[in-house]
Image 1: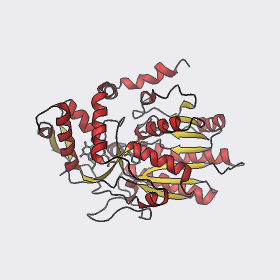
Image 2 (image 1 turned 90 degrees about the horizontal axis):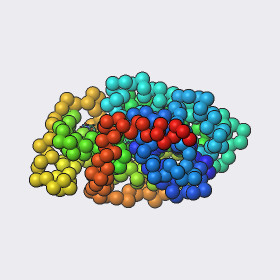
Image 3 (image 1 turned 90 degrees about the vertical axis):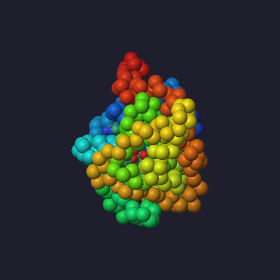
Image 4 (image 1 turned 45 degrees about the vertical axis):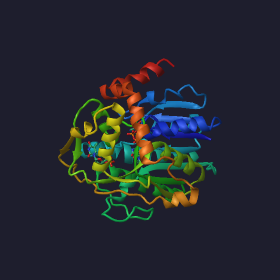
Length: 350
Ligand code: NAD
Ligand code: TYD
């Protein structure tokens, strides 16, 4: 199979690329990424010379490039992860999310449709990696299932909901073979330090305040990123065409409880007196339209395909903290912007 992964230089994408490059030496894995602020090719330094790995710097907004890449690599399947992914940024610049997440997804659908038009094969698949945030916010009780109505509240989730709808519509209208998965909050190595967990780890390391939005009593369902990558591999090969799957950690945490656990683990690992990191907690103005609670019912992927998370939250969080503590240079490069020169250095003269 020749698999096009979009957004492979991002947080989840690099784990998916690495898993598939190492697991399937007979596949061609093509990573298409625009290398926005969130894309960091250095994340893939360990596989960049693998014979079955290819990188294309391109934006999904450029139709010509997409057509060229489909033809050049004879693409069989698409794992579409490229997106603007941060809710806070979407509140400031909604249009960036419309362009990349909606227009970009439709461009990619069109490129796949065009390339597969006359010779649609059994192995062709357009797999859209999406979020549970499309379902909106839960009250105290209940879980999101695959049949929960869409009710997105942030510009980010509205753009992902829209792109999900386009993917479904291409399946109905043009018989595009599709799978969609809606996953809960991921955490783990290589996450850009703007999302809660890596931001707070970074701030604890540099003794900066930990900005807790509102009263901190917002709930998220956390999943270790490598477990998400395993689920994506499973759905790529065994997902029922035309279906959607929820993926979650069976792991709900109120932000403030998670933050206190993180502070405790950081104090242990840094050799601080217990309570040191908690002193950095600072309650700040709430996020606009802040969704109260997300929680996923992942029983469909569990019962159909046997997928369950491989790590407990304590194990995953501990591994994640260790990774950031052992990769302070990565954090420094990402926060200073130095990582953005890696592409020129490694690829410009190839
Ligand atoms: P990320 O922001 O870390 O990475 C996004 C990647 O897409 C970057 O490498 C960036 O350079 C690339 N990109 C952005 N715009 C592009 C464009 N126009 N053309 C080509 N590439 C472009 O995101 P992530 O956290 O890895 O999320 C990946 C996908 O998974 C997204 O679609 C997101 O909606 C979804 N998702 C994320 C989470 C999460 O917790 N992070 C949970 C569920 C679903
Ligand atoms: P985030 O990592 O941005 O993911 P999402 O908004 O997609 O769920 O935020 C996770 C939770 O943490 C969310 O309830 C907002 C909250 N949060 C803070 O309290 N402070 C912060 O600085 C950030 C980034 C998030």
